[in-house]
Image 1 (cartoon, helix red, strand yellow):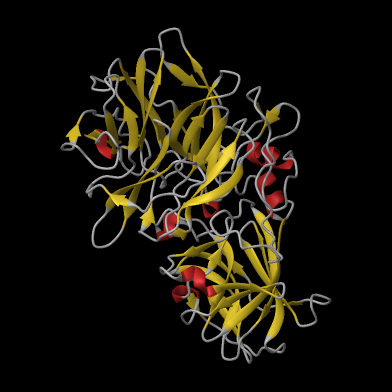
Image 2: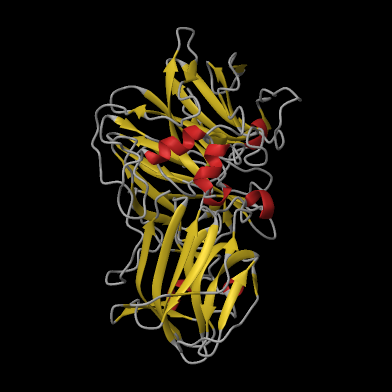
Length: 524
């Protein structure tokens, strides 16, 4: 019985809702490799950015909207996305070029004509919050400046009614900033006790985080995430409070929580970490993240939810579980959405906007050379675990990718589905043998009949993975005798808040050549 038939029979009812299946079936094809949210009939279907795009930080800048996400161990990091209608988004440049640690939820702001990114980092020997700035959204961005904040995450820049600048932090705390925003100007203080859910709810933990401050109609609104960002599908949620002054006191929203997944039967799980933004037509919307039901492996995806301001000066979110098409905000301009994930390596490598390294060294980009229609990638380490593989973000439940791979003498190379250095799978080869990657280790090594050059193909159909090889340039394909199931390659198993990402690696001496990388989404 096929998976779709099992779904109809109810065997996977806790995992994927019928609403989610119906919505996916109605999705309009978009740019190859990028799910298209715009349905072309005045409506859109979530997610607006598929795949791993967690902790959205949005900035309205005149007629333009800019958006970035937690990039964790992927570098170049903090890719800036651009839109003019809140539905269709294009990647621009990555703001963070140097590896400073695992980048969590940031604050993207513009103040007195200058752009700022406040960046919390998990790193050894201690955590830190940095700030970088630029006079243009595309950079160049400054070198990161540490603020000396080691005990908090998720900063949010806010300007008070008296013009003072502040960073609101996890746990209901805040700290004053200097006038230029590049240092702190006082001690951390506790200013807000977040609303608490009933203790009968299934959550991961209280974890008040991700504060976002918005000013509207004479009020400051603070939106906070509680309940934990993963764990049970019903855990993560959105709450709000308001005050006439940024200095408090803060009044809890009588309708808390404003967003929460009610059951595992919904299309989107663990919804939270919200920001508010005004659309071109004056309507208001919220961007937040959620896991697609049954697909933790794709990471937290970016969702767009309409809100309504109410007569008492509060607001409510109106999108429900977001499994159905929603009317688009009017006005603005629909830019081409997303980007193709295939790459023939004939143009400069899109580092940051498409390809990223996992935990790169300072000189990692020096491993790349484009010549003769190929990506020449210098080997590093002995396996993907030690080799900083080159990865991209996929947003499809089912997809296939392939590449022509030619080895340097003594090298090993291949294709991977990579969560982190302790959890990945894939297929590589040296001149004599294949190497099977599974569970983050290297396992079987059967004989390689193709020698130093072959085409490799990875197919992932709703977590069922198959490998194929070709020694004649793709004229004929041979199925490799090891299949895998990867539904457990995700945060609730491994931690880290990451996603399972396709990519390629080269290990050992010399430069391996990668030609004609092709990615395509597969239908249900």
